[in-house]
Image (cartoon, rainbow, N blue to C red; front, top):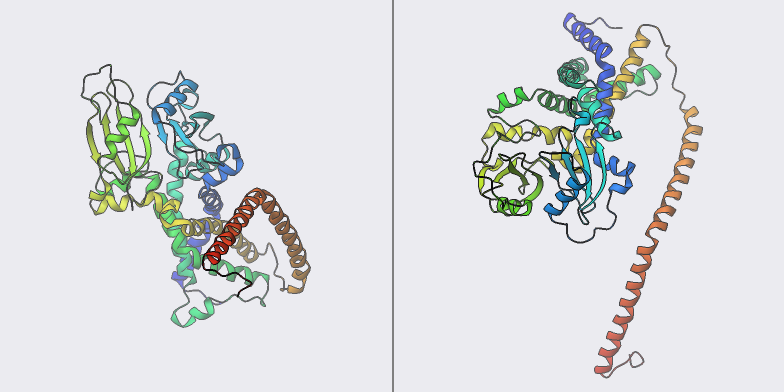
Length: 445
């Protein structure tokens, strides 16, 4: 082993000790975070009754949907938030922030799922008691409440240091970059493991630095707001509280009317959330998403409508934000990948999985260095039978999946075939009629 310089030896020790102490938590955060990227898709897969297969026309009114929620939960007073679906196949979620069953937990609202086409309440669930929300809590707070939330922020800082030290250890100098990018499969299992660890770490380092940095800011929103130079910029925040100054009366503004008034300020926007008033001084809060706004689920465009007067009390328009708050609006969608589109979400998923692989390969390297495991030569011929069996199983699974897909699509394919057949018959009749008008037929040609 070549002699390491003093500075490089320090970097190596820092990287090693951070990995030994925090590596497991890095892997846990990476795995849970990567799964959370596709939380909604996974929830629909586990609960197919929450996915609308055939959209049924127009949505029911917001007032009718809210009435159905209150009928299902008549003893839950105060404010509710209706979150609109992002696709025609999605359900509306009615959020009740502090139910008595989970009142003392850090974050465990009631989630009521409503079919927007029929206003039927499908199910009621508590956050943290479903598979996907449990995984999100594991990622954001390690299932340890406020202490875990703070710990995740600290782990984000440590992960940044770990990635930076790893990059420093990888750097071979300008002359050795080409060699450092190679993976040697003929030098033994341990060298292959080490080469893979270094190359994987290099490839995912930019994504990990971005995820760790944005994760720290989400864990410590006070830092985010100080950097942004504004308040109400944390994830899920809606700015300052605004209360009604109108006199209560017998003709309160309906949800539909409040949304209509709010859209007047942003006619091209899409409704994302509606929060109902709490108490006589409560006020409607309408969250809209303007074209080009980076946040998909939690946009910052907000209009407050007085329930008693129906007037607009205040408007928050992210298009008028200064540089600091504008940058702050990117933190959440960057961390979740929604700002980067489908390819970005996939990249984030891979980056999260890579933390687990980096932990495993790093531990294997360390165990080898302390003599707990031994090196072996690479015998690729032993992989041939394994690859052959894997290929056969994959082919069998793929064939079965294709047959199942064809079976499910058969009604649609049959309808399509009949429509095409009918079109051909009509087209032939049209051509024949045209030829007859021209005094020609196929026999004449």
